[in-house]
Length: 295
Ligand code: UTP
Image (cartoon, rainbow, N blue to C red; front, side):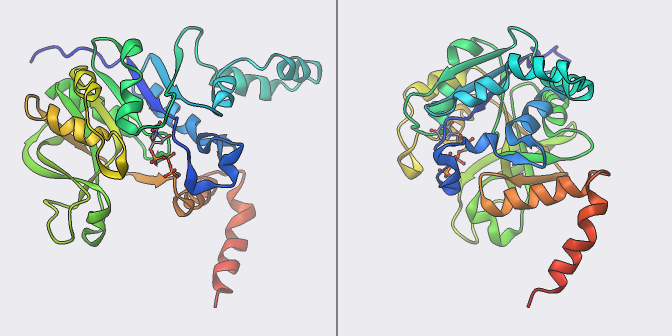
């Protein structure tokens, strides 16, 4: 089997306006909203690190500088923690800090769409295959979604998307794939349809926000016309790339929470809090009582 080029870099597009979370996102990027006690972006960076990613590329925009600060040393805070012997907190912060030189930040000056945000990372990524993780989709599973994708990619090469089952009645809301022959722990993708009209979806497997892409996508995105929502769409670029390259799918079976939407964000908070031994005992009974009291 041919040795595949290692996936070393991951792109995190964090330049969107987050209008579904106004007014909070007037001052706080949605990627910095907290799920239990960590910002949403930290969960996704952790997933990338677990998959062996060595370089983290953030495509930011106006009002997102706090994300760059979050991934840096906070000197005064650490000094204060040292003076107060808060060693556990110091260790926690040190463990989350990316190694010097392994995080890059570039700006998408105008939020023209996800495809355009990915294209803004072209010079930092260069000519190697790379991962894209949508930071508002956070996942809970024994094995991280990107790690499973990298394992599949090592067998298939090419491009790999993560897919997940949805209620067939909801398929019209998502990007849906067609299922071809089995490869490794996944399958070949025969088609991709963005938001198929009701009853026409080729399957109930939706693209859940994780991608491994070959660098040829950048050339395509450079001239990609605006599509749905008048935005430059990554899916449109992938459809062009699929004419000349293979796409495979990794079927993720864990939970995905869409933290870009209020319901997904609240569910993520509840789910991750209930997984925590230090929090669950204090909230489980009150939650049951609260739900039982609903009319
Ligand atoms: P979304 O469409 O979910 O994010 O894009 P949004 O536009 O910020 O959200 P709403 O609809 O206004 O509430 C998915 C991801 O792509 C990024 C977003 O930051 C988000 O993480 N994105 C989107 C960009 O980086 N640039 C864009 O132009 C659009």
